[in-house]
Image 1: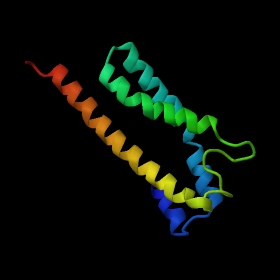
Image 2: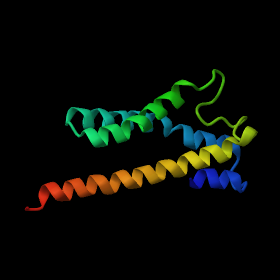
Image 3: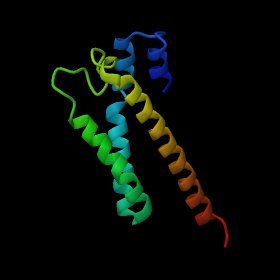
Length: 116
């Protein structure tokens, strides 16, 4: 979010912004897929079903990168057609999702450890 807002305010150029963001796309896809599979294996159905659409969206977004682009974030297209605003909106939604998941995981951890 900070890198995208720096690009929006012209504190950073598009190429360096996109290279910073693109290096985190693959670890995000792998990490979220691993967490989703672990929730399936451990039979946490609600959390699995909550994570499945986000993991699917991350994989879809990574697979659908047009050939010739630098990655999910491309410096030649980031200012076109409101992509910067949509990337910022997606980052805010993911931040909210990860905060919700953090507190759900924390609650589940405390409820399992604390004596009844």
